[in-house]
Amino acid sequence: MAITSKWSLRTRILLLTSLPAFLMFVIMLAYHVFERLQDAQAEQDRSGKIMATQLAAATDFSIMSGSFDSLIPQIDSILAQPGILSVKVLDPSSQVLFAKNNTSKDIHQQTYYRELVYQQSINLDQSDWLVAEQQPNSQDTVLGSVEIGFSSDYILQQEKTIIIKSIALATIVLLLVGGIGLWLAFALEKPLRAIIGLVGALKNRQFEQRVYVKQDGELGALAYHLNLLAAMLEEHRILQIKNTDELSMARQRADKANQAKSEFLAMMSHELRTPLNAISGGLQLLNGEPLPPSSKEFVEMATIATGDLRRLVDDVLDFSKVEEGRLALNIRPFLPKVLLQHLSDLFRIEASHKELELVFELEGQTDIWLKGDDMRIRQILSKLLDNAIKFTKRGRVGIKAKIIRYNETQAQLYCEVFDTGIGINSNALAHIFQPFTQVDRSHTRSFGGAGLGLAIASRLSRLMHAELRVESELLVGTSFSFEVVLPICNECGDTKEHKPVGYNGKKSVFNAHVLVVDDNPANRKVAEAMLKAAGCTVVSANNGQEALNELYAGGIQLVLMDCQMPIMDGYEATRVWREQETERRIPIVALTANASADNEVNCMTAGMDAVLNKPFRRQQLEMILSAWLG
Image (tube, rainbow, N blue to C red):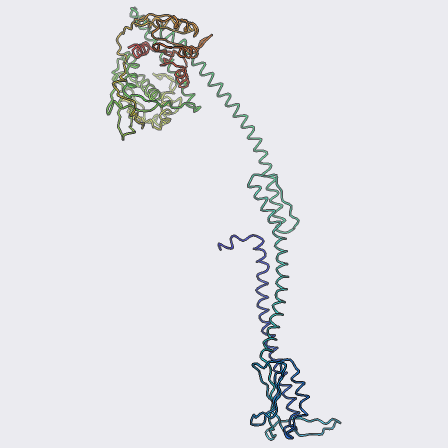
């Protein structure tokens, strides 16, 4: 089967047409040769017997007279026959009376034909002919016998001649049958190969190809239907190309729309964050002033509302990025305990406003440096803490973190955010991570929000190959947890050299000369006031060019640089300054309303040292001052 599977179509057709005829002809040829050989042998036997009988009839007188001269002409005529080697006359005791051989032929093995010689009687019948008959019977006298020797080689030669002629005839017939089979093979192969070629063309998506078979019957019908199939496929391909072009154009329009939406959201985020920064900063400054209790209450209410608005803006922008798949991980070394310290500093005041106990617990090997996107981890925990504080009226909220070292290269960071709030009913747990989902959808609900925080946190967890889980009991509390496996940064050095300085809630004094660069007067005044309250002396600039002039004048110890400004933006101003900076490196902190990861990369690429997103809190600014001014 392995051999026949490789045969060509022509070979198969040729064998199919020729092999049965060949087998039948071989059988018939064998039978014919056998019959011819039998007939030749029978013919030789008959001839030998006839010649012996005729010679015996003429020999009786010669035997009786003892003279064989009269027989010589007849014997010579017998020896002249093909294959006759010898003629002998024998007495009754088989003694040779007369013998003559064919001297022109070699005497080899012979086949002998013997006939008895009887004494003849002459009978006269009613005709005018005198007939001598040898009528042997039991009373006849046997005078002797004659013996004619046939050559066995002659017999073999006759058989060879028969066989050769038969083989020649067989060869002619086989060639004729093979030629007919070959013609049939070519006649069938040509349309079949054309059909196979069309099938191959269809496989290669060459639907415009056609096959032309000038035959009726099955092959013609097959070619006709294949042409119909090719025409249908060609029609579908044209339709598919048309649909693909339309889909491509629609996708391009959708991409442009998404790009426009992204640009619009980024622009709206920037435009919303800019006034929010002024409002939030102004409220924070007012909160530090000696105000009447009623006024202080209104300031705190406005501060909380501003924070809610800021979080809503962040959620809408983040959710848009998550849906478009534009969020990417920014892998860098970080200390988990520093991350928790930052979160503690950010949420301590908010928790204290609701008289909640804020708890941060870190277990395990707390001094291990890990490689991951600490900003996304902080974002997840921030959104979970926002919810925990929002839905907890009394008791405590917090984060439990644990670092479990797997081996020399990997560790697991487990994080859990818990609260003693109102809890979540079991029916709502099934869809708690869906966007725009709220546990209480009624018009009498007690808590606001767009329902995006948990959806964003869940998607960010999956981005880091983690799963955000929730456990809750009504009126007892809720906990959200996830664990992520991260590489260990063994080359990041001793943690003591990187010990962070956190904001402790107490008023700090920094004796530093700070440059504030912002084209928005309100934001510039808020930053100046916060810096002065922290003990700094402040100079300001409206754009990057003015900032360079102030830097060239000297004495600046730290720069708060807005990114988007007229004349010269913050990126360009930073690059220009870094290119010519020769003395001590002056820390430049980006002061930006674009809170995207891409913008943070752009800031670092331009030469900035840190990023402070608007709207920022007073304690965040003091943390920056502590980190860069000591």
